[in-house]
Length: 194
Image 1 (cartoon, helix red, strand yellow):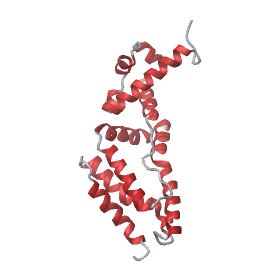
Image 2: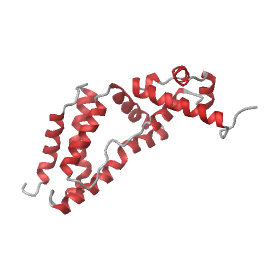
Image 3: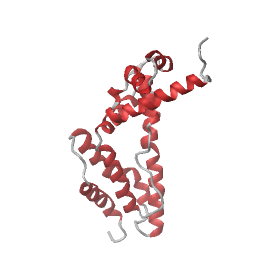
Image 4: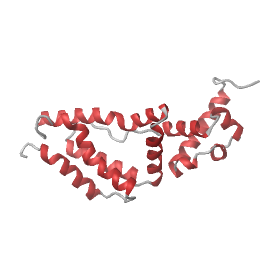
């Protein structure tokens, strides 16, 4: 009798396979996520993995979705401190070789795959809204000049753009000093005394 999607054994094997796929993705990037490697890591049969994911792209998309974390998240603390903290965390993640291949895979697949596009939105999408709110709070506290909140996307691009360029295109390991200089340069025109 075939197992249904509600069958506890099917749910357990799917969860084990997805956990294994996510581990393999983080350890070695997208090319490390195959039906064979997932089956071996999860301790289940390859046919079981194929029953849950009939092809490698669907397996990879589910593994990518399982490891989605927003790249940036903001609150109401001082905006410069937040930017430094967020960008240092981002550079730490980007300095991991598998993170580069995972992000590159999501970005590349998002051009033609709706599921990958949703993953990209989870990674990048909320940052603009959160940052706009953080900038508005910073303006209210007098940290930044009024109108700064209208330039959230531009500010993030001025900071994250060079980091992504350095890491993705030049293959440079990102350093804290670069983060500090980019954050300070992006905020300088918006400081109250500027």
